[in-house]
Length: 142
Image 1 (cartoon, rainbow, N blue to C red):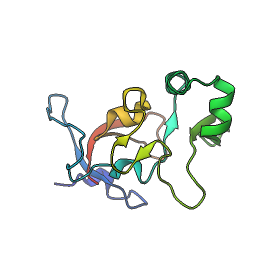
Image 2: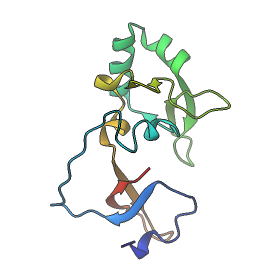
Image 3: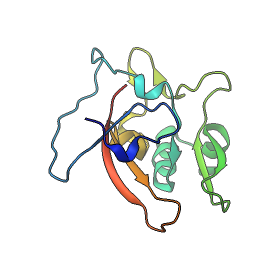
């Protein structure tokens, strides 16, 4: 069921590279007892959008500066140095700092956009000699 366009993905990914069609429907509910409960939070590599920062800093009762300093790390989003921020994790463990083993996400109502999409992943691919990305959606399987 794998799509040949994704055969050269250079890393082990939890994404099942089966393209979803525009009319594909599915039902998902996160709860303790589901086989993937908290799995998405254990390898947290979450890029934050400005709206994510606003929602989270408001939920935590912090200023934007306080939130950015305590809960994010800067990174370059592309080869041209486009700045971005990611959720901070501990140096030795990539678990999301807002994940509780028993309760799950402690900021669930205000979780980042990337977490809201789960279990859907947006894959963008581009051939080296082309300028436009080809985007596809796929299911994530933890």
